Length: 250
Image (tube, rainbow, N blue to C red):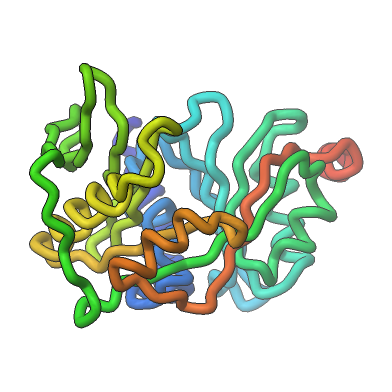
């Protein structure tokens, strides 16, 4: 990224800061990708109202989780603005992973062809309810991008693993994976506990996001002191619809 584009990114990020609350778990993921994700892998488009005040934005981010489908998140005061941002910023026929508040789900469905969608719950740790699980099998492993991962191995194979999908100056989202052969042993809870304790040491607020139907993840989260915030996100695999693409070209 050249100096001119880097400066433009800084100005755009400064412009949208008032649209996000740094202490709101519902804004945490969007704040990270819009404000803190690597600027070389982030495209940020800002929408301005009639008074030339920023009232919405869309962030398109290339992530290591999916090299072929950029992550898209946005904020907008209404469905019309959201649709305009989607038509302006997205490439026709390219697949994306879209994550938006439930209030903007209708705008995404209207502008894009959604092939798979779900609602995710946002859980936030209540530190007063956190009781660490001590498991000597848990190993702390360094990763190339910096933040450690916590895992349990058996016969040279990773059977349970927890780490963070992203970290902002305030929040961090915890992920967990448990091999099918290792389920029912409490190993998922053990590695999430170790990761959670690490985040508290780093003075970050741990978040845990899961699909409403994922009972196993719900048990892990609630068993460690994570509590449902009541906030929901729409997560979908989608591409700009033909109609929206035609409108974009007109």
